[in-house]
Length: 71
Ligand code: SF4
Ligand code: SF4
Image 1 (tube, rainbow, N blue to C red):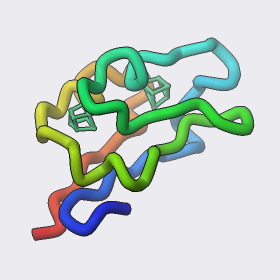
Image 2 (image 1 turned 30 degrees about the vertical axis):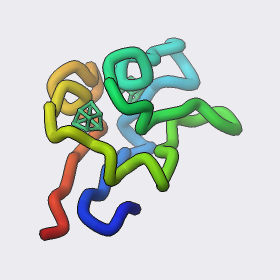
Image 3 (image 1 turned 180 degrees about the vertical axis):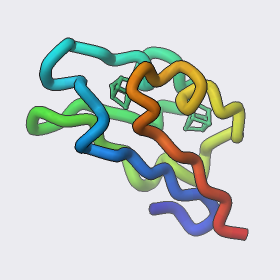
């Protein structure tokens, strides 16, 4: 979690390990997402770089991402 922005990923919804979805990784302009140990996780120190474009939320086919402003 960043100081200003938190990117929540619902691991029960995300099907990345089953269907090789990498939509969020491909679309995020500031590299918030990575695939690690079989699941999609954030790179915590990049979360505050989020531009609030919300493309990850919109493009995620499983509606697994929530972008939260902490301020
Ligand atoms: S809202 Fe945009 S910048 Fe922020 S994590 Fe999603 S895709 Fe990346
Ligand atoms: S776009 Fe959604 S379903 Fe696809 S890898 Fe990212 S969080 Fe998972």
